[in-house]
Length: 401
Image 1: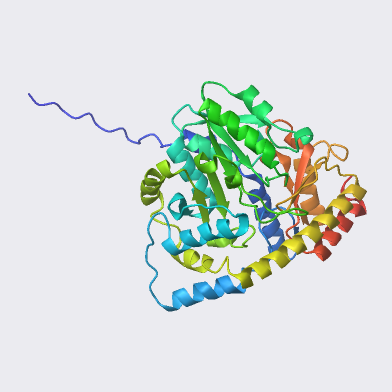
Image 2: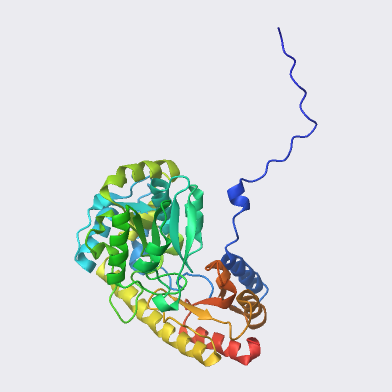
């Protein structure tokens, strides 16, 4: 017996994007950047204080290392876990800078810190797992959790705790569905640090609950008035996931290179995931980064850190004069998290007005905080002191009302 096929409809229904894409909010800072660039194309002078990207060129020794590699003419895949020599160089960096031993086998080279965060959640997150995320915090973290059918749970933090979680707040928010906690030190957007003793208490609490701690240290080298630290220095840190990057301190944003330090028992599965997701991180970038830890490169980068410190000082003083409130002094990164509630009711409107009328590009808080984003504005001191002074002057000239 034969069955006749049903005729196809004249027009099939249009296929919609997956629900995760439809539900995804825009990253407002990138939309503001696009508008700022459009204004520049029209001949406007725009002072960029919106994007978290150092304004310095890539350090010459790093460029030269890439040029030497490219001159050989062979740009092949590296192993999925990364160039062995670079993994060893990072391990040596931890030994030289922090006096700790990290096996190169625990280090995976990734396509930026974003690649490291993606791999961490790919290996850790099962559908329905909840992750505690400080609020305010880096907005993309929520999307990394959602990408693997996890549940991002906002953990409100405020100036009383330096905009960082405490062991007490983590304990209060923990549920049977909680898989772990993500923190950043220094943090985006606040620039604040978690004290090592508090991080140790948080870590102990998570260990007792069988949870996992992911620590974002991508701004690690950019701290002021104190020495950089790493969570890997804490007792029992071999069960943490540590994310770092060549983007911020090392000034290699467009090279798209980061790394993940993972517990040894996860490294084989992480390598398999990397094989399927990205094959490997960009090969020229990996060879370039071999020069990132050389003494001549460090001299350049430390001079830039001193310049960032001066910019921070100028911007904080200027914002204070203009009536902005900065309830927690940023100790690292290159951001100021300012309360603008005494100036306006909506920081997004203020950001657009500053851009359109004053030519100063900033980022509204709605990118970073779910509860009261209209109250906050992030300003990045990723432009030189003269331009920061000019931006403050433009704001002073009636652009805040």
